[in-house]
Length: 324
Ligand code: SAH
Ligand code: AVI
Image (cartoon, rainbow, N blue to C red; front, side, top):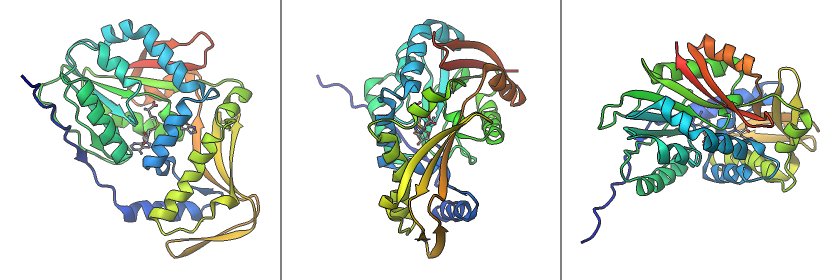
């Protein structure tokens, strides 16, 4: 007898408007220094380049977070308890989530939320095949804008918001707190937040992680310009920009830049933007926190840090935060 077919996960789509994205891009390019949001990294090519970054020897974040998750999965599972709904912000390929999906007790649903639509759909389909007993409900949305969550078929006992990867670091402290407040709402009464937070450390380790020898991070950074050319009628010449990542001790963040190698004018959707040699666009900040700094930010959003797991080298933390 043949196996029953696994249904394709139903996608909930919160259509961001192209016009809003363009307005945000033009506004960022008018600033001094010029800025673009890191959310524009993630088309299909950008998502794949990020996957490559996670495998780089210099990029300690992913393998360290994975090792923490594997080591403490028993304790994490006990804290979360049975019949939870797992809502993941910025799920990407859901690689780390597999550890949770394999171990959590009778999960009510898994709701991955990501802006990179096609990548999300592929990841959700793979998970539905791998975990046929779990309801997978993908949401394609910009999580910085209001979005609706689908209702699972089975009523969960509690909502667990999962935010791994230290993606929280890609937001300014004010925006990060606002995002934590959204997560507080989504966790609902009795819910919790499980979050990966990268820690402050030696500048050399940090700058190496964002300036890898194979040049993958440079390709990831430059991909944003290729995307603007393809989707927003821009004419960036990628050979006239260089990747740079520098750690600013105060406030404690890596800044990724695209530096103009000459004096040039670029057109985006009919508007001209001039660059002198060495002018740059800031494409990403990756804030690093002390445990105290993160606890304070979480507290202001309504969470109390319950348990913190750290690797022996104190590079990265995974934190379980309860709604107060
Ligand atoms: N959670 C994964 C992936 C981290 S990469 C990990 O830990 O390895 C960051 C992810 O967040 C990407 O998949 C990207 O598409 C998504 N993302 C970034 N900004 C977003 C936004 N504003 N709304 C929704 N998803 C976003
Ligand atoms: C997704 N985010 C947490 C990564 C980071 O480390 O800030 C994105 C990244 N940028 C360069 N390398 C990786």
